[in-house]
Structures are given as C-alpha cells and as structure tokens.
Image (cartoon, rainbow, N blue to C red; front, top):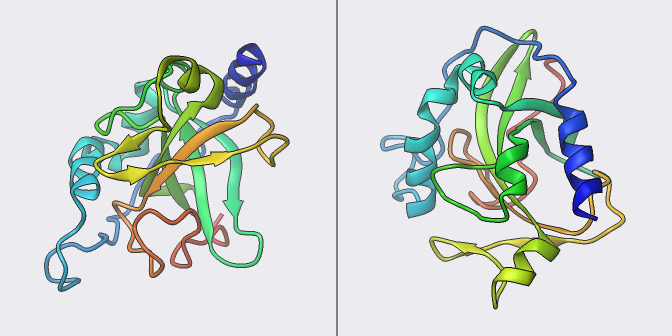
Length: 181
C-alpha cells in the first residue's frame, strides 16, 4: 500500500510548475485584519512557509504540483497542492515542514494560501498510539477509496495565508477559487 501511495505522489511530481510570479497574499488573521490573534499553529506555519510565498522557492526544494486545482464538492476550493513526496513518506508530521503547500492560481502566477499536513494512516498507526495532532489540532482520516487515489491517510489543512470564514483548519475555503487559472 505504501508503494502505491508513494507512486501516486511521485507521479504527481511529473506535472510542470506553471507559475513563476507571485502576488502578495491576503493574510489570515493578520493583525489589523481580525480582532483575534491567529492560532499558534497558524503562526508557526506562516513563519515556516514565508520563503514559499514565491512558488519557485518551493519547487527548488522538491515541492511539485499535484492533482490540479482542487475545488469543493459544493462550495469553496483548496487550490493547487505542491507536494513534497519525501516529507509525505517520512511517516511523521512537523509544523515547520508541511507535506504540501497550497497555492491559488492567478493566471500563470501562484498565490500561497495555506498548507496541508499529510501522513499515511497505516505508517502512522504502526508507529504511534493515537492519531496525529499538531499544536492541539487533530488530523482528519481520509479513507479509501478517495478522490486522490492513495490509501487511507491523515490530513490537516492550515489556512495561514488566506482567511477562511469557516476556520483556519477547515478543508474547504470559500475565499479560494480555481477560476483564475
């Protein structure tokens, strides 16, 4: 099963990076934009991913576009996931090293909007007594079959660079669109 998951993710790296230029992102819960301070995990992710505002920095470090622009089943979107296969396959989660960076397409440019933490469920469960958590945020289990094709995995979205009206850790973001591609 891990081989299938690895092959699915690594196959996605064959997709070309479309955008070079990047526009300034609208920050999620940045001071002056919201009266509430962002969650600790949002702050950690924002600091760790600041270099990836420019998508070229992400591709230079092994992140590659996967799955095209992901839209919601009835509303919202996620955007284009740039996945780092070795991080997905390491069986661990680290708030400073997300497995996927999420970009909203704006023509041939990419705007960083969030991240997704991803870990193979079997690999995680074989080595840990409980489902993964980061800074108090629980991961969701995505069973199989699923729209992305890998075996069951745990995931957690963090909208660190785009405010999500439904919350910083909800999968679908109504403020993200795939219409700009």
